[in-house]
Length: 391
Image 1 (cartoon, rainbow, N blue to C red):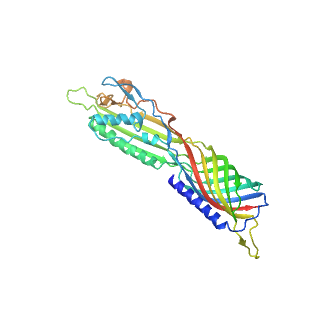
Image 2 (cartoon, rainbow, N blue to C red):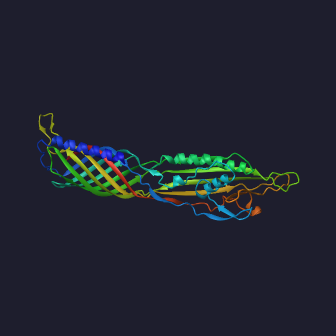
Image 3 (cartoon, rainbow, N blue to C red):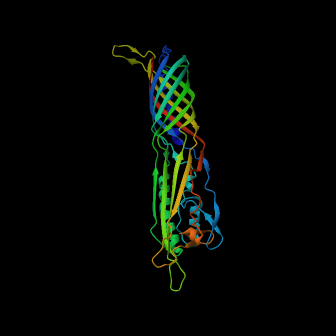
């Protein structure tokens, strides 16, 4: 925002310089032409509203535990109650390893709109000597992009989950197999087109400079692919080792958890526009020797403020699976339950129909769950210069 204020101040200073340097010159005659076209080029600075609401999945404590009591049914180890459960279990076991939950990433908008270039085209109709109706098209290649922290947050959750799950299994007395994880983040592509209709009010000319203000409404159109990503982890362990004279089991378990995240935003949104600028028509000595401008063309410097609501949303989907226990050659029991911790406890079951107990990772898979709904006003500041021509 400081940069925006600084750029606006610079633009205002440039306008003032033109007005001051040209105030002593002869005024340009009022235009007799009724139509005007202009092309502009400059920069577009956008703000990113930080308001919104984070809504994690509902907590479900209906999972019967083999050790007695009940525990949480989770849908993902990577955020919300799943990450909390794994961290709580490690804390009970005396381990300092923790998973970096994705709650922070999901708790704010995953879209950012940075500074970029802007190219514009204007068509205007002169209504009166002081009032002009204008239609504008402004294109910017800087569409919705993933926030800088998105890919890093997924990597951190991926890596710390692998360490935290392995540590919990080891300290809890199991023999873990390698934990495999993966994550990916699509940054988003495309751009935006601002289409506005406005009225331009001209102030009295000061020499060859004519200051003006602009106000109107329009539509912001977004195109391209919005950000999205995924993270998954597979883990397993051997537990219940047989001992001489024991009733143990030759048990192993393998589970897999995947979480997919996507962002949603309107393809079009209403916006308002307000601007200030100056038209400067220099005296030009043409090759035939005439020193005139004839009010037909000039240089335009302008600053415009676009503002409107932006309702970005973040949705997640989850899935999980397990490998069912398989018979062995020794006729030992292969179906079993492994519990880590006490309150809360994480439970792993490799054959629920036989053991009658399910794993903690048995919550209803998430489908199109909205975990974040954004709010606030997004502003864009365009500072441009260009040429106009009247006919």
